[in-house]
Image (cartoon, rainbow, N blue to C red; front, side):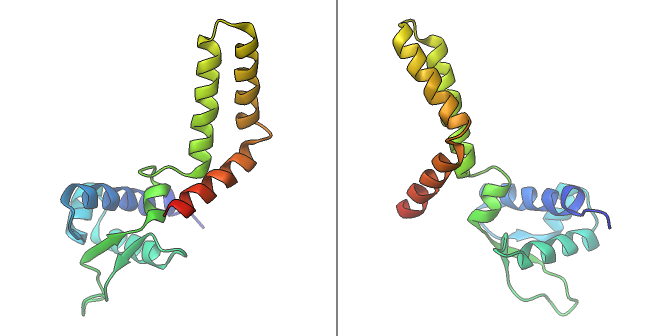
Length: 143
């Protein structure tokens, strides 16, 4: 079976997130056809797949009598993280590691430079999973 994620579902999801942010209102299925270049049947299949994912990527009402979904009413945080509009804990950990690398490269004092390099190695290596878990807890508790 051929994957539908790269060629159908992800482009539709990216379009939904982008258009929802631009319009601040529901996104229409015809807008997705126009934005992605996919035909209506493929857009409808993508909408169905995205709304039925667990957790769901999008919120839609009931389909119309023809079985088509005409409006996407909401975009979930899961969708925004998936397309990169919101960071994931892993992304933030990677950014933290990169910031320590950059700070180490700019530091002229050898002891500080060594400590910054060690921190970068920790966040980029063995400590990545632990750091990601801590960041996830901070994000979740902050919400």
